[in-house]
Length: 283
Ligand SMILES: Nc1nc(=O)c2c([nH]1)NC[C@@H]1CN(c3ccc(C(=O)N[C@@H](CCC(=O)O)C(=O)O)cc3)C=[N+]21
Image (cartoon, rainbow, N blue to C red; front, side, top):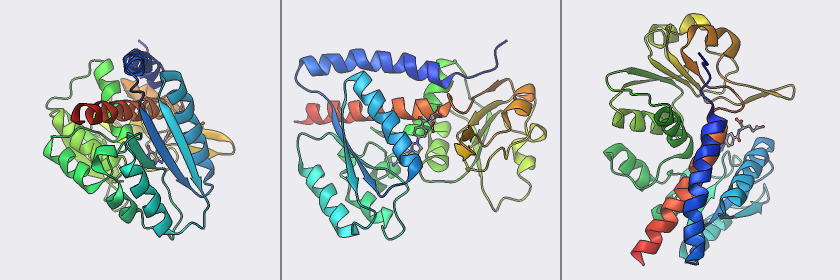
């Protein structure tokens, strides 16, 4: 049996469905429109923004990329976000991360209108996420959930272990996996003996940015392994999972590239459409 969880294929399928939905909105003169603010010249960010632009064009979403110089002041970014918050033409706003060190990302997130928060990174929407009552979800975590759903994987009563406690992946994914009735553990750089936990995991998610951290002997036979890592090593991509050896032990595994990455992008577009629809209904 094929062991690969094909994120690229699922993203393709879902983007086609979304495109049909967006066509309806466009026919009603309600084309979804969002802004990506990028500060500075992070090389990876450029790649990701290009991937989003391509997906947005394909689906029929208007994506506006706003490039700011590395030296821009925090106040200027805050002023820009406020302007976009107030603009009724714009349904969504996000700040591509990472931002340069002199920028306090927390303050930017505090500024974004929760109704336009496509990344689900404002305190209000993070709170709603943990209450289990949310109208937007963080793209990567939502993408992983949609992959599990497409493959009809039921997590009720299963042990889910996430390596990585980031605000954009590890923590929000834990909230969404709880909603799926999994028992969730979050491991991190200070965890003693990762293997004690990972070897029990029915679902193992690696989201730490450490190339091939997860080896075959850390994985329970028959587990589902999701690799969120994207590490560029001499011009090729490596995940946080040692794919070749882990795939021999796991039942299902996502590749890098072609796994979680494309799902993240597709999932972000779904968030933009949800917010556009919600704003339209509230007018
Ligand atoms: N505010 C914010 N929101 C994000 O959602 C966000 C972010 N910041 N910062 C960085 C991460 C990462 N991310 C990805 C987007 C596309 C691919 C993607 O298209 N990956 C392709 C390969 C692309 C390549 O060649 O690098 C794949 O895995 O097949 C991956 C990862 C969004 N992120």
